[in-house]
Length: 464
Image: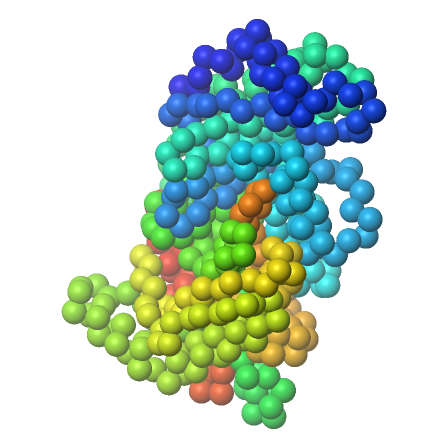
């Protein structure tokens, strides 16, 4: 890794601190704590390698699907922030308002997320994880449209002198140096345990279909956790790096709230992207595997397009998103017929939404309206969620979460699917399948197997 020479030029750093203070008129001693942001351009910087070698207990990483944006961070400036019992949507809007005030060039991002069901307790698998997070990093590295920038952010007290800030910033800058490349290795999995097992899965599908038949719900998405033991242990960044090799057109996400556990995801699904009054989202549902040849792949695509069960499942997601967004919109448009999203191992039906928000809508209100969507929960949302609380035997935690980044002007959240939780020498892989009136328990189990296979195959060297 080759970083800019400015990293250890104290005179230049002192000049940057003085310029930043002057820009905001921060010599006024009456001002309260405020963030001081130092931006430093970098060259040939491997964000994942840096995070892999970093000793911070809190690390996070997020990149968008087309790789035009990549973000890694450590530490949190908001750990002691007084949120005044705000809802999570309110906190999201609060931090965006803060960034608009202090980050005038819109570079700085906060890492944000909410579990699938924040009203449910987390089990031991998720020990150390919060139900919601907003982390404004002390150190972050962002690559956006080919330009990489390190951002060192501290909360500066007006009574601090420049030497104090210089020492704090230099200490944080030192964490950017000396990263080693990530080494691939064979990761051997053993001792597979499915929760629920195949028999219990069939009962869960049948119970769901009974609820559908009686009109309680139109659709519910059931999840499965598949646990393995990992010989020799595993590092989350190493796993994400190996997953990413076979995960084109997917978000890449890692959230490690401590050194004992981490959540990783290579998700194809966007929850929403919001830039000002413009919002885009999508309805993804229906799954079939990829073909071994172009002819087989096209035949499978046509089968997906014509399958009644998959079309109904996808239309329910479209309906759910439309109803959820309607109160927030001046205008909403979506594709009249679903197209096909092709991934490395599976393909899905997808309808894309383009929305103009009304003046009262915010990133927080969009999250509240959309999460969790019918693609990972069901429809109607509340009835489906209540059914899942009764049927599912494990805590989803950050599986199917809303997870992403927020800046002064933009917010983009992915849906945390195609994911795993890592703890010690174990890994839990999550998959899900949408249940509608036309579902068949055996076919739905096979869909879980196809999705599990797509995760395992995307991890080069990950063998079960």
